Amino acid sequence: MIAVIAEVTVKAGAGAEFEAVVADLIEQIKANEPGNLTYQLVRSRTDAENYRFFELYSDDAAVEAHGRSDHFRAAGKLMAPLLAAAPKIEYFTAV
Image (tube, rainbow, N blue to C red; front, top):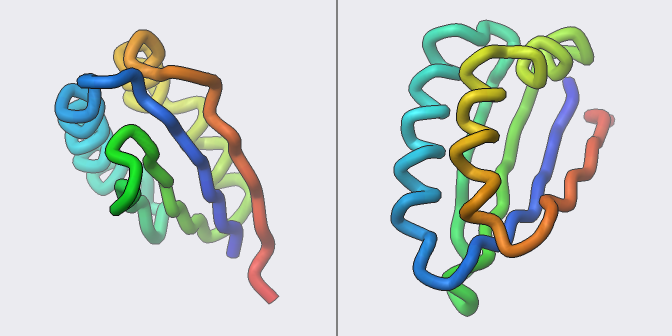
């Protein structure tokens, strides 16, 4: 199992639009990515512009398929102008 944790900071006032884009993305992931086990967005309780994605995949192939998917690429284009900085992404292997 592969875990991905991505830290994302959005521009001030962009949170609602960002969350709407991600909500649509999550629906697409659930419908089209059998190797994705969990895809959850959470928002900081102390900094409304700070988010984390918690993602679990069955294997490396599922992670790669996610990154190549049309829905992920389309969402990325919609999210990019909303971000205050580049995402910080970490990959983990289950032990």
